[in-house]
Image (cartoon, rainbow, N blue to C red):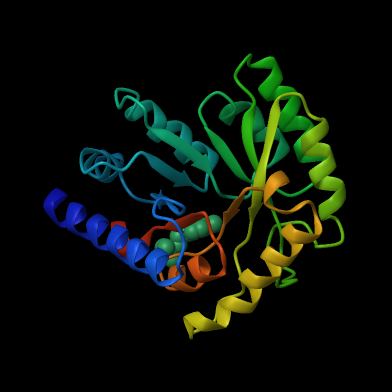
Length: 229
Ligand SMILES: *Cc1c(COP(=O)(O)O)cnc(C)c1O
């Protein structure tokens, strides 16, 4: 099991390296966030043993439980990549190294306040944008982006780092590319890479297209941990 997981992790890192090279981008300019949602702590432990350090979780309770079960893993970094409710913020501020899913002024204010109260270093924060305009998806609209970015910068507990998106599903992975390009265009319209160095976009089936577009974090679950039940 853990050999198989290590092999899958290596295959994903190879995919990323090939895509980075193909895009003519510098080696190391794209990092892998291993998305472990719904998978047991033992799988995270196996990926850690194979060298992975950054893990993404979607649900607060699951993140809290897994972080506790894996508290012995030195240097592990947890990223919150699921929709975050304001009343759950206090449970995550001490555990995570980054939140990728801030999508409102009110959430930015609450997260900043709680991060400040926790006395931690400023929390790396990405703002999620709903580039596809899908009603059921979280993420702020492109029109709201400016005010959410300003709220993150105003919050003493937060460090603005970049933008994140989950594009609408398309069977053809290339179908995601226009949405990735849209996120890049929004970054350029809001201060460019100097203000927003990180772009969190691309998953198992479309990570190559995200890397071509400029992703700096790809969030990969299925290709590492297998299908979710
Ligand atoms: C589940 C999830 C992923 C990983 O998706 P895979 O297709 O399994 O690679 C990435 N990002 C977010 C926000 C997710 O919820």
